[in-house]
Length: 130
Image (tube, rainbow, N blue to C red; front, side, top):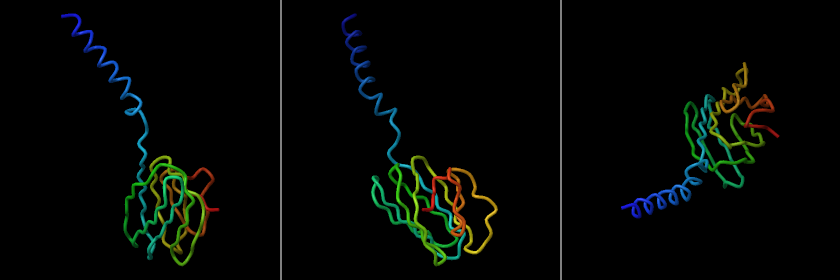
């Protein structure tokens, strides 16, 4: 009776040791929410180790994208303007594009960021102009 219990216990420990690293690992995908408050389509191009993504968000809408975790070179176009920069997607991020010619009261906060094509974001933000 003791041998089967010991064998089961050893198998359970072995199973736990095998699966624990996989269960503790961070997911490889993160969510990116893009809110478009402009009067034109927002286009975002991301290129990095996680792949290349071409994202489009119609005016007045919100879209959720799932992308590979990582850092990307970014190109963003809206309101007849284009900016290039970097985008750190090591965690989920909310990005809101303000009306094209509206004033920017603040840049939001890291991971909940507000973009105005005329005003570069603070250095701590994940969405950065070059």
